[in-house]
Image (cartoon, rainbow, N blue to C red; front, top):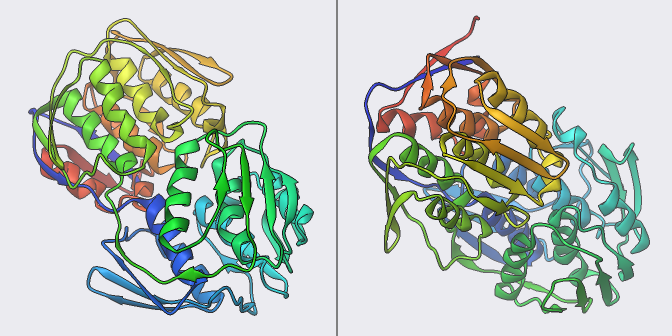
Length: 426
């Protein structure tokens, strides 16, 4: 499926940002581990969150969906082993967390997913789980993989390459038989761990940790309390209407944002402001207009998901934009550093690829081209934004993969005035 992107006039309209993927998946798994019924309001309805629901259902939870609320009857940490492997689709967050949680059970449980998920590196987490009492089998440190408990707890070193390893252990270990101590030499994406710690606190789970998030003490034999909570809107999703607004907006209004939330990706709004983006914030509403952007340097370690969109904005900006200290962007749905460099060069961008980032020499007009999404939702959405200022038609291979986290993306962008024509053949 190809998306042909074009725009005739400046964009105008409102975008209601859907719920946070990070919050929704943590909520689903916390509800699964809790005792009693938890209520999750305004969750993200997407392929990734559907994978999370399917996973907890397979492991023993009861899930009911009514309107804009999911009611999940938890298991109190008692794991039921399904008869067949659990397919997690494309959801890396679900794979990381549910693998650790499944190690609380006594029977072997196998997880698999699509080709992209099977390329996600799991070795760091599996090594930690093995040190804490679990039995792990994998295909070269990736899915398909199997885990078998019992996760007993203890002390181990955790790989901080991706924060999801640590998040997974933090969610599972409070239910282990023994206390645990986790040590890290470094941690990428620290704000995602802060979201996890917030969920643990809301569910009555105690964790002692250092201010630099490199040392954790987790008492065992704890219990998750059930909860009722509204899922905050997703700032990593909001980045794309933000980018569309500064690229071609007459008046693009982004709704539902809570700047008090812990999501690190809210910093993208600060990044764009630093680039001289025309942004006005009033409460939970943000108005964005077309802007003459200026290149800046950004440390994206806390916000790796921002790299595809920021690379596009660097192309629009005058001067040089440096996206730095984000090596983990190479280990997402694809190698986002290499892939964004390759696709934007097809459109005429002047980009240097770094081991841990990109240098974009802006001010050079982009041209129409056929570009590849790599079945990566954030690359598809970022290239859609790139198309808004390109001279000529831009065709995106499998642009529809953005439904993984933003099912309403095409509909929302069409409402703003973007032409997105879908076609099957080249």
